Length: 90
Length: 117
Image 1: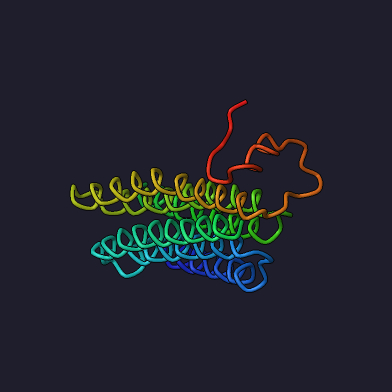
Image 2 (image 1 turned 60 degrees about the vertical axis):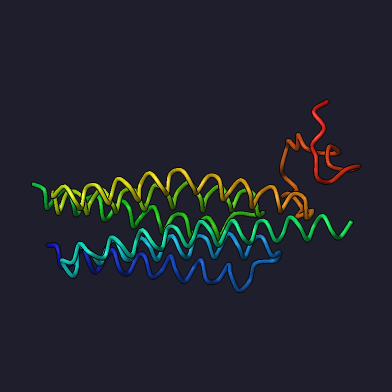
């Protein structure tokens, strides 16, 4: 049973990754792309969490921690950059 | 029993991640997309971490899961708020069907501060 559950989880997360990548490519404005990147890194953190079950390696949780931290700081940096750009345009 | 719970949490979590990505594609403007992406994805990661914590009930794994969960639940709303604020300052348009914009006109003179009146 666990085998098929793992397959379903990986397929669903991959579909989610493709949808988010569509928004990253298509997204009309730059903040849209930043939101898509944020969701992509969250989905990758979820994929790593699912691989803990699949590979029986709980040490992969450290990678999930790193992914969450990188996602947060990347989004914050993009937001600061966008905000400063909007201020200097005026 | 714990295997069933783990499978259920994994399926629910990945379903929420899929719903978040679907909302990111289907919603009409940036602000609704952001709401879908931030809320559903943090719940999805939370469910996946709960599944791992049930599958490996040792102190170390549970501590790491709780740590990541707290970090995600604290930082995702902050990041979404900052993106939304930056997008509003950039002038990203709202969906034409939006009924409320409480910030309209408040940023017009001095773009860095919000007038309260």
